[in-house]
Amino acid sequence: MTSVLVVNSGSSSFKYQLIDADDERRLASGLVERIGEPTGHATHDVPDGHWERSLEIPDHTAGFGVMLDAFREHGPSLETHPPIAVGHRVVHGGARFFEPTLVTPLVLINIEDLSDLAPLHNPANVEGIKAAKKAFPELPHVAVFDTAFHQTMAPDAYTYAIDAELASRLRIRRYGFHGTSHKYVSGAAARFLQRPLGELKQFVLHLGNGASMTAVDGGRSVDTSMGLTPLEGLVMGTRSGDVDPAVLIYLQRKTRIGPDDLDDLLNQRSGLLGLSGRKDMRDVIRAADDGDESARLALEVYLHRIRHYIGAYTFELGRVDDIVFTAGVGENSAEIRARSLAGLEHHGIEVDPDRNDSRVGGVRVISTDASRVTVLVVPTDEELEIARQTLSVVG
Ligand code: ADP
Image 1 (cartoon, rainbow, N blue to C red):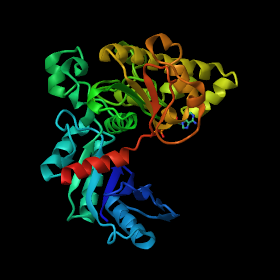
Image 2 (image 1 turned 90 degrees about the horizontal axis):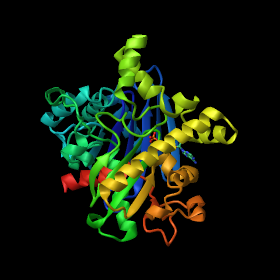
Image 3 (image 1 turned 30 degrees about the vertical axis):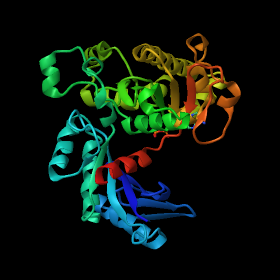
C-alpha cells in the first residue's frame, strides 16, 4: 500500500495530504501554520480523527518534523503506507515548465529564478521543497505548476500588445493560473459524460476567492482569464480582475501611489471587498438580499465580467459541449451559477432550476435534458491532481 505525499507551501505555512497511490483515497491531511511566529499551530486529520497542537515552529524544516510526529502518533503509519514520491504545488513555472517536473538542483534554481513573477509564492514553494527534501531525502520530489496547463495557449492568446523587446526581456506575457484545477475538472467532466476528452470543447469557471475561467479544447487550455499574474480577468474576493491599465497610470499621477501600495490596492483591497466592503461571497449575497446597494452592484459587476468571458470563449471555441463550475462559489452557489447563464437559452444553454438548487455532492449535471450544452458542477481536487501528476513522473 504505497502513497504520495502532496505539499502546498506558503511563506509561513504548508498544507499536506497523504493519498493512497492505488485507490486515490485521502489517508491524512494537515496544516502547519504560523511558522516563525512565537506560537505555531498544526492540525492533522485522518478519516476518524482530528488533532491540533500549538508549539513554536521556527522554520519549514521544523514544520516537517511536526508533520512526521503527527503521522507517528496519530497515523497512518508511513511504514505501512510508505510514500513513493512527494508532489509539490508550485505557483509559477513561467514559460519554462509545461509539465510536472522532477525536482533537481537545476530545477530548483529555475523555480527560484521565476520569483520575480510570483514574489509571494515561488520563494515559499522553494522553501517548502527544500524542507521536504530534508524530511524525505531518499524520495523523488516532483513540482506541479499552476501555470503548466496553460502552456498550450497559442501566441495570439498569450501575447500582450506591448513593446515586444521589453516584453521578451522581462518575460511579460500571459501565463494563466489555477491550471491544476482546470485540468482536473475538465478531465473529470469528460469522464462523467463518458466522452473522449480529445473531442470536447468546454469551459471551466473556477470561482473561489481567486477566480479564473479557461477555454479547454480537446483537453488543452486555449485561453484563460488570468495573465502575467493571478490578477487579470474575473472579479475576485479582493482582486480587481481586468482594469484599463491607464487607471494605474492615472492613480500614480494623481495620488503618487507607489508600486507596493498599488499592488496592495489591486490584489488585497479591490474586487468584491473594494466594491462592497465584503470579500466572502456568502456575505455579499446576504447583504444584497437585505437591500445593500453596494453589495448588489458588486454582484452585478462580478456577473457582468463572467458573462463577458463566457461570450468571448464561446466564440473562440466555435462550439461548446459543456460548461463546468468549480471551487467555493462555483460548487456552492446556485444563485451565481443561475445568474451567470441566465437568458442564454438561444445559445443552447439551459439550466434546470431544481437540479441547480439540489444539494447533492459530487459531479452532477445542472442543465435540462433539452439543453444543447451540458452544464456541470465538478468539485475540484487539486491535491489529487498533483498526486496523479507526481505518479505520472515517477512511474
Ligand atoms: P480559495 O480560492 O481560497 O481556495 P474557495 O474555493 O474555498 O477559495 O472559495 C471561497 C469562496 O467560496 C468564498 O468567497 C466563499 O464565500 C465562497 N462560498 C463558499 N460556500 C458558498 C455558498 N454556499 N454560497 C456562496 N459562496 C460560497
